[in-house]
Length: 135
Picture 1 (cartoon, rainbow, N blue to C red):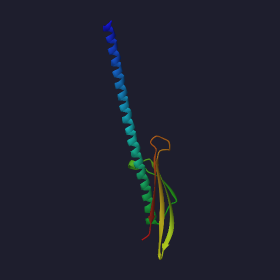
Picture 2 (picture 1 turned 120 degrees about the vertical axis):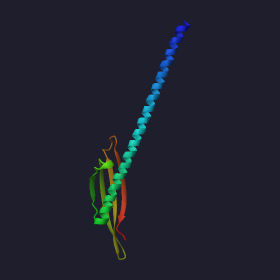
Picture 3 (picture 1 turned 90 degrees about the vertical axis):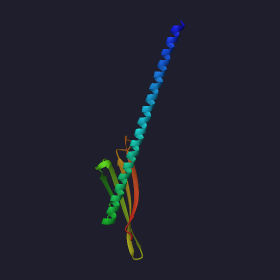
Picture 4 (picture 1 turned 180 degrees about the vertical axis):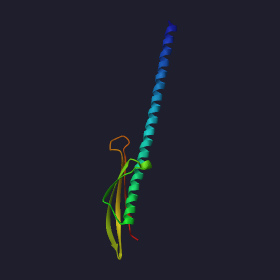
């Protein structure tokens, strides 16, 4: 009887080892997937920042070179890494004078977003900048 009882015990140990190794493998795959998703979301956030920066630079150039400030402009980017981003740029201008010097100050807000809020892969960033034509 002892011999038969020992055989059954080794089967239980073997099954236990297989189950534990399977759980460890599943855990390793899960960790790898979450790290990849975190990196993808970080990249999307960085791209949103660059898209928002592109919007502020576009508005600042327009304001300083053309002396024009668009109240609200929507741009759909379609080049390179910023493809698919929608950038909403708003600008307001105020006139100032100090002695005989007149100048304008432009306040620009740029909101960039990719996808729809609540969807997988959604990313957005908002930047504000101030430009002036003061000498």
